[in-house]
Structures are given as structure tokens and as C-alpha cells.
Image (cartoon, rainbow, N blue to C red):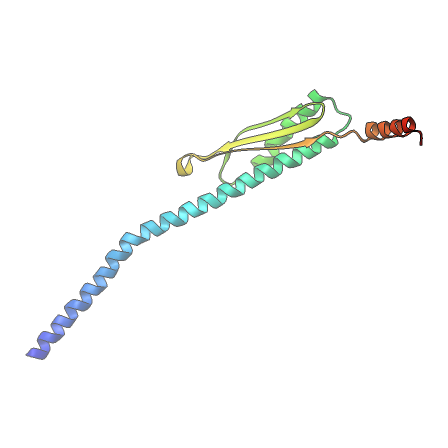
Length: 150
């Protein structure tokens, strides 16, 4: 009789321990899934920011290399290229702005994007490059050499 009572008691403890594991797992699993989801979204966000920086720098470099284009023509061409270059590479952000500004000495390309996940993350990235005119640089160097008397 006593053995049967001890076996029943041991069975109750074992069932209670198995049930407590289920309760603990049901409380921790949603938290763990949420943390993994946040980490995944942040990784995608950082990827998209690096894509925007890369695209802005690439287009600014291309614009700076176009030596003989007028500022208006170059700016229109860069704005046309900007949206297409970044849009297909973004994974999380939606491109909200792609603009270019060309002055006599610099080319600046800027991007802005946003997402509704994680409280509405936004990104604004910019790349710029100095416009060089190697022909004028060489001519001015030769003029300076002649002035010095070499």
C-alpha cells in the first residue's frame, strides 16, 4: 500500500515538473521570437543604409568624372539614374527621395528612405565628389612653371 502511495506521489511530481516546463516555454518563446525578429529587421536596415551610401558615392563619382557636361544636364542625368540604381537593391526601406545637386566644383547625391517597421525607421544618406578638370589643372601647372622661370 505504501509503495503504491509513493508511486502516485512520484507521478504527480513528475507531471507537475513537465507542466512547469511547458508554461515556462510558452512565456519565453514569444519573447525569443520577438528578439530574433528585431535583430533581423535591424540587420536589413543596416544593409539598406550601406546600399544607400554606396549608391550615392558611386553616382557622385560618375558625375564628377563627367567633365564636359553642363551642370543642368548632369544634374538631370544623375537624378534619373539615382532612383533606378538604389530601388532594386533595397530590402527593407522604401525610397522616398533621390536627388542630385551639381555645382561648379562638387557633385552631391542624396537618398532618403523609410519603413514602418520598428516604429518607423528612417535613413538619409549622402555622397559627394569633387569635380576635377585635369586639362585646366595641367594648363595652370604649365603656366605656373613658366612664371617661375623653369
